[in-house]
Image (cartoon, rainbow, N blue to C red; front, side):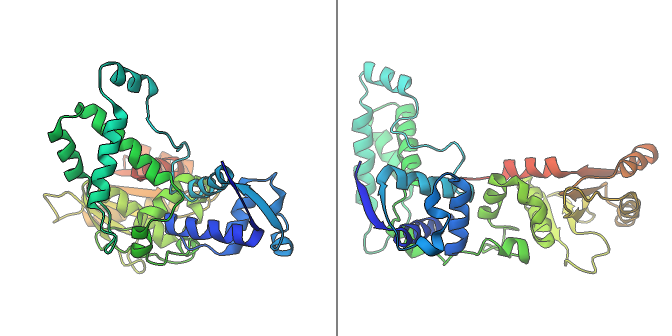
Length: 332
């Protein structure tokens, strides 16, 4: 592998361009250096970046990829265990070869069809379905071989730190990551409650769920129930009478099936018994089948006891369950 000799500032800013476009987060140089220092604590080139930015560094290409991958994983765009591979299962690949199927031939054919589908004058994402259908019709390999090799190509393309023309064209300038923790973030698609990149970020950084803006926690909760195939109505965010979300069954939107109160608290700040008892009256008033208190912290034991003793139709989703929701909703 070759190496590149450049100033530390050019090195950092090249990584910044790649990570910003790949993740959709608009990071500052300071933010990037801070994350690099945390991810590579023994790499002293980042410790005094502001005074050493003109320093010349020699970075091998595989090292450069590692820097980018670490950052993309830290921001949630890549899975923690993502690694490049030519074929996912070597033993299975060898069996294909022994049975007379050449995976390299399939890979070359897929690549050829992708090149033919690509329009350099109007770069867009390539629809994989016609390509797979074409290869299946040519009967050059069993379906399992075709799907596995196509998946390997997609994996390696996702992992590459090259910025493709289509990514440049479709990039919307990114979103500042800190905004998710400072104010309500309205997603780009009207049907969504929260952008997927924020969910991915929280899945990679679960310790930060208690710091998100309270309104974004309501949106995150709404997104979870939407994906569970419910109709979800998000409250106004203030003067909502204690009901942050109303959840309806698809076939009945006359009465809420579940009403939800969201409590975005620090993990050490428990939801008190008074809150639990008060929310019970909201469930009764709304005529909902059950009420749910979703919190990034925990419910005080007194609150749980009163629900058990009085048989209130209330449920709780505490810190760990919220993390489980996020795990379910991650997409990479």
